Image 1 (tube, one colour):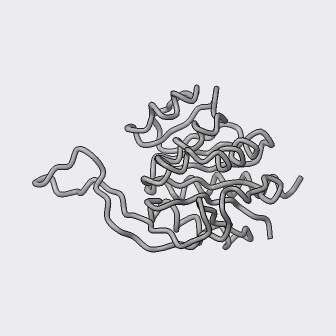
Image 2: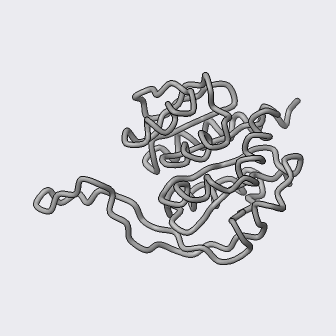
Length: 190
């Protein structure tokens, strides 16, 4: 079964992560969960609470489910994967500093393999220096992260640029996965 890299860390957003984790195997792709180390990670629910009586300026974070990483970033090999799915949440803020994660994401991009990215995941793509000149979307508060990587922020729910598909957040899961799966299947037919 073709493998999709899914990098995570403590604080990966639960809906960003688990939707793809369960959806991709339905179309014959094995999701390989990688983390800084091989261990169990904590996901989080990220949202701005919808109660206008208690406003939040930033995203509130609550505990989510746990997810086991089966491989450490240092052991990743680009040739093992047909693509990558990069979820959001708080994890990208710290896992983007991992040189091995950045190396493999950069290698996947340079090999022109499909990469899907939601929300704060754009921080990883910027750190990997693989989005220069690309169009992307994300949650507005992360637009500067992609722009610092030399990419052009587009104020849309989902943006496709070559083999990169980006979405604002978990609300775009279905649209992002449709585009990503279309890319993956197209690559398989070659």
